[in-house]
Amino acid sequence: MKRIFKFSAAFTAFLSYAGYAMAQVPAGADEPTPLHQQLKIQFIDGGPPFMTPIILCLVLGLAFCIERIIYLNLATSNTKKLLQNVEEALETGGIEAAKDVCRNTRGPVASIFYQGLDRNDEGLDIVEKSIVSYSSVQMGQLETNLPWISLFIALAPSLGFLGTVIGMVQAFDDIQKAGTMSPSVVAGGMKVALITTVTGLIVAIILQVFYNYIISKIDAIVNSMEDSTISFVDVLMKHNSVKK
Image 1: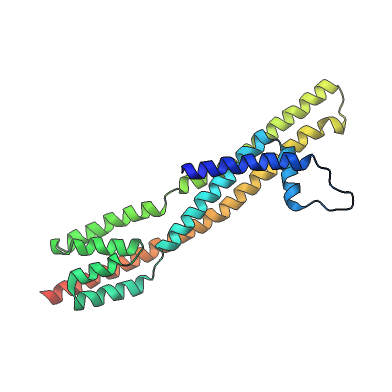
Image 2: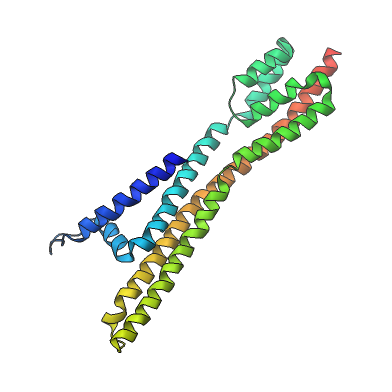
């Protein structure tokens, strides 16, 4: 977490400095302005006090999204193959062999299977309770950091709208001072208002796409987890009946 905040602070500081430096250099009349330079200029025009928190929301939100995507991809496994390997291990080597299969397989399903195998001697009722309890723990781990992503999705447009309101207040204040409704008087405040709003909405849209992907990935893993645990209990029942 500390590394994420340090990276975010360094990134936003660099973006502010680079944007300010590039904004001071006028582009050639015949040369098109590069996209990255346009973004830096817009960052400065929007006002660092408003744009920096919005960019921070983007950086931190993307950091949490990438962390979740990597974790969920590592947690995804072929549950049918795992169940087949566990069943074969039970038939050939017993409980300990099946435990070895689970230990050597990554993912929440293998961990749940291991907990069930570890309680096999206590009866199927205890096994089922253990599986249900540990499944809840694994689901909680899958959903780690999702509240933070939701916070940044809500916070980015809110900060943009805050910049809009303050920009409008600045525009009306300039009108009051100038005593006229000239477009050049209100242009500065209106520009801040529009840039911060657009940036906040873009950040929220980007994070929302990643958030929905993460949610769909979690749902797929949970459904696979529930189906495989039901089949796993059936395999244990079959093994225990054969053993008896």
